[in-house]
Image 1 (tube, rainbow, N blue to C red):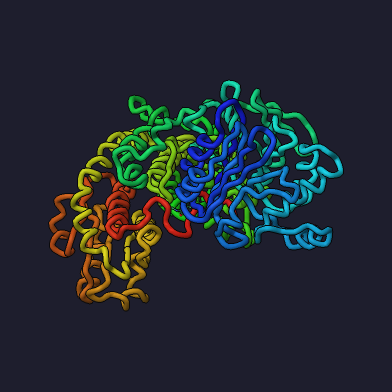
Image 2 (image 1 turned 90 degrees about the horizontal axis):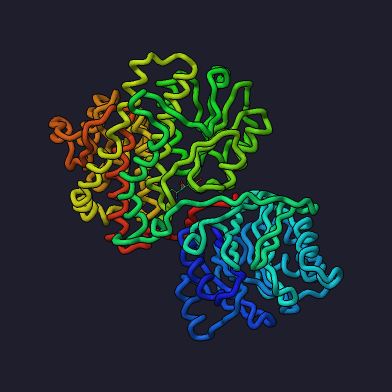
Length: 614
Ligand code: AGP
């Protein structure tokens, strides 16, 4: 979704903003623009459709300089993705300019009202109404701050907004309403930054604070004043973000996705760090604030999430039900809030989100909260809304994930859910000590085992060359590896644009078996888990219909080796942890197919990294 960067200080704002926008490309966008206050008097805007390089080239041909500026990458919602609709948008006077993330839900009505007052619109966007409203109020009050405040009270929907005025060149105003994405304030020496997301400014500063909904920040080069929309002063909490800016660079890899797949040894190690005491065989998740008493009161857990995060939740359901014997439902977040879900006493709504800003997931958390549930989140982005609004959270600790296709932020939450299941069972007194110690000890080897899967990249790449021209693919799994079939299929379709279906293998005979012929690759998840025999017979059924079967199987498994046409091997692993490994060859497979097809792996068409609109 849209990305925002702003700068105020003593340096040239243009390279800082363009560099920040580069770091936000991963969010997904279709046009970009920059506005700089030239000599503190005149607003200069450059905008172009398409990739950021188009804007960079435009700026090289028609330079803009100044020490205050704002920039934007736009993911179109209202109006085509062309230069005219790209942000920043300037008002009629040419003295005010804005960038915006969100949808003005009442924009038709505001548009008509402004047009009736004689305002001429220069774009087809909903955003443009905002700048005209601000100008309307400036003409009455003379104050930018007051005008932004009044405007924000008039627009409906969720928004992140940054505003600059040539008449008040000593400040940038940023504001947030609801969950249209975050607003991050960065603290430098005699300079300040504003952004929609941490990586945009991470190479400038590690000191950041975050706006809550209905707060605005008046940012000058000396610091920031934060207030609620009704004027109540807020003391911002400055956090030190320890993410390594290099982690947000591709390094030796061709794509971020490939780098992030390979980072899983490290991210899984970091996921365990500080949480697992292997000596005592115990798990600690302090940010959940759990006690024996509160754990015993839990009657049900509803896991809610979208996309890949929901697939991690499906694995979590099996883990928590098996280990902690607490009933778990998994609800797709975009469905949850619209069906008036039943929340009984003792229910926990547990959201999983890499970005922590997914609008549907945040709305599901809110629905749970309103109905009296305790809310927890498993979240990666530090300071994100899902982390802040939850009663308790588990931080993923995987560092920035830039590739749109989620990889390391899929394996980490599965480990988090495994640890959560052990902790809950332990606190509820239902897990014998020897079993707890065994389950905890099993975690010890997970990062290394993930590394062994990664070592087989070349074998997987070989298969990718064979499958690159497939039109369809069917992914089958059962039990704890059934969600991995969904995830494998999602990875393939989102980055390679090959149609793929994930299916519970036992359901195949109820319909999808009709699809199987020699042109339909069937990817079957058949590691040594409790569903292994069932999967083996499923493979036989697919083979009997002429299907080409690729099995994800445990090393040395002669039976599957004979049955399948090709095997992607994982090392032996306790079955409850097997999804963490079985997904890795499927991530690599999707990656190489997309890379061979020459596609934009990290920014696939139409997709955004954090989906902050409904
Ligand atoms: C994963 O590869 C996706 N691009 C997508 O499904 C993602 O997992 C989903 O949008 C949820 O995002 P979140 O984890 O940031 O909430």
